[in-house]
Image 1 (cartoon, one colour):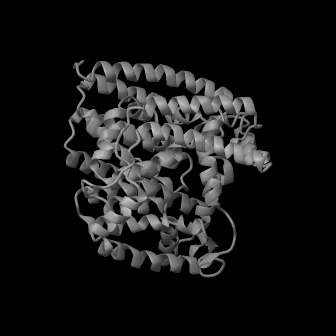
Image 2 (cartoon, one colour):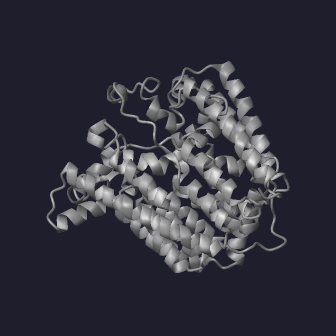
Image 3 (cartoon, rainbow, N blue to C red):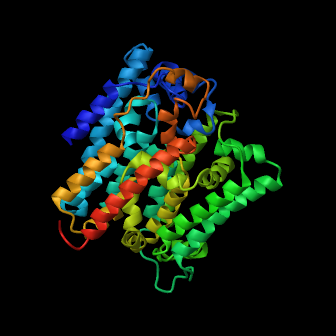
Length: 475
C-alpha cells in the first residue's frame, strides 16, 4: 500500500497533459462544470449525454460558491488533487473490506490488489488527466457492490444512485445484481447451447455484419473514421479471423447457463420483484426528469454509434483488443484468460443477475478502448480472486507477478517530450503522440501494436508458466 501511495503521489507531482493547461481533451467539459455549474445548469444547461457525467465536478463548484473561493485554474486543479486522493483512500478502504468479506489468502489479496491498483490508469492516467469521471465511477461501483455483497441492499442502492450523475451504467449493473440475486427455479428455461462457443461465434459475426452493412450502405468513410485507418477488405478479413480464433480459444471452456429474456421476465414475476422495482424506479424517474429539464438539444453522443464502434474496433488490427487491455491493465486480462474455465464457472454459479451483468461487461471489454471497463472492474475481481484462491501461489511467486504488473504499467515512460504538445494539437495520432494514444486502443499505431504484441507474448508466457505450473504445486 505504501508503494501505491508513493507511486500515486509521484503521478500527481509529475507531468500533466499539455492540452488546455493540463485539463486535457474530455477534461474541458468537466473543468467547465467545476467552474460554472451554478450558472450554466440554470441557463444553457448541458447536452443530454454529458449531463449524466457531472459528478463530482458540480460539487466543487457548489463548494467554491458557498465559501466564496474563486474558481481559477490553480484552485480547481488543487481541488481535483484532493478529490483524487480522497477517492483513492476510499478505494483502498473498501478494497480491504472486500478482501476480508471474501476471506481470501494473503497472497490472493496481494495479487488482486496489484491488478486493481498497479496499472496505467491508476499510476499514470489519473495524475496526467485529472478531470475525468472514470476513477469516481469505479469507486461508486466498488462501494455499492461491497454493500450489495454484504446484503445491505438499501445502502447499496442509495450509493448506486450517485452513478446516475457519473456513469449511469454503474447504477444499472448494481440494480441488475440486486434484482436477480436469487437462483431461478429448477425448471427455468435457458439456452441449450454451449455459452462460450455461442459467444465466440456471435461476437465476430456481429463485427463482420457491421462492416458488411457499412459497405452496403456506402458508409466506408464512417468505417475508416471508427478504425482510424483506411479500410482494407483483405486486412479486415484477416483481423476477423484472428478475432474469432482468439474468442474461441478463450471462451471454449465457458459453459454456464444463459437464460432467455422471457425467463428473466417470468422469474421477475415469480419472485415478486415489484417492490424492488418501485423502490428504484420512482427516484430514478424523478432524477431523470429533473436532469432532462436542465438539458439542451445539443448533440454529443449516439448510442448506435457507440455500439457500432464497439463491434468494429476489434477489427482494426489482429488481436488489438487483448493487446490493448494488457497495455492498460497489465497481467489482469492474462490471469482472466488463463483461468477462464474456473473464472466463468464462478460467475455463472453466483446468480442469474451476475451472469447477465458479466455479459454486459463483456460488451464493453471487446472494445479495444480498454478504459471503458474501468468503472466495472470490481465485477470481475471477486470471481478472479475466488479462482486464484484455489491455486497454490507462494509469496515469492506473487511478488514476481506484482513486479511484472508494475513494469507493465509503464507509468515511468515520460510523455511530454519535445514536439509532443504540438502533435496532440494537430491530432497526429501516429507520430510522437503515440506515447499517449497507444494506451487508448483504437488510436494505437501498427508499430505500437507490434511492440505491445511482443510484450504481451512474453508476459503471457511468463504468467502462464507461473499460474498453470504452480496451480497445484507450490513454488
